[in-house]
Amino acid sequence: MVENTLFRFPIPVRFRDLDAYGHVNNATFFTLLEEARIQLLRERFGDTMHGTGPIFLIRSASCEFLKPIPFVDRVVVELWVERMRRTAVDMAYRILDADVDDPLVYATARTTLVCYDTEQERLAALPDWFRRTVTSGS
Image (cartoon, rainbow, N blue to C red; front, side, top):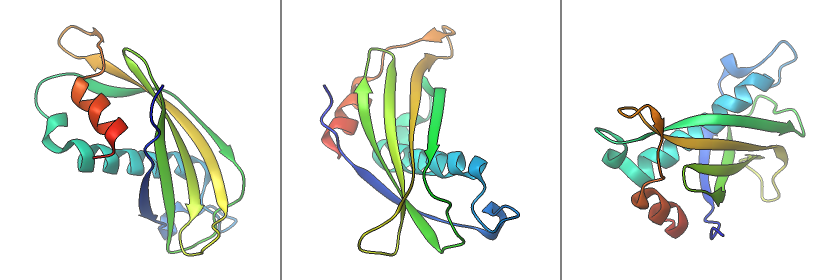
C-alpha cells in the first residue's frame, strides 16, 4: 500500500489548446497530465532521472472527461501514486479549476508507467530512490 502524497501543479491554458467550440480539446487533457508528470519528475528527481539507468514509459492512459475546460488562465493538475508494483506505478490525476475556492473537477485520469531498462531491453524494478521520493513527498 502506498501512502498517497498529493502533488499539485498549475498549468497554463493556451489559446492553441482550444477546439472549435472554445473549450480545451479532449486530446489536450493528456498533454496537461504529461506536463504535470514531467514537472513532478523534474522537481522531485532532478538529475537522478538523467544519465544511465532505467527510463519510465507510459503503458496505459485513460481519462474521464467530466466538464469542458473553458479558456481560463490556468488549471491545476493534482496527481498521486495509487499503486506501486515491482516494475510499474499507477498514477491518478484530477484536473481542476485553478482560481476558485471550490474548484470544478474537469477530469479524472490514470496512467500506468513502467520502468524500462534500455540496455537490457526489458522491464526493470522501480528504483529505490523513486519509491522513497514518491511516498515521502520530499
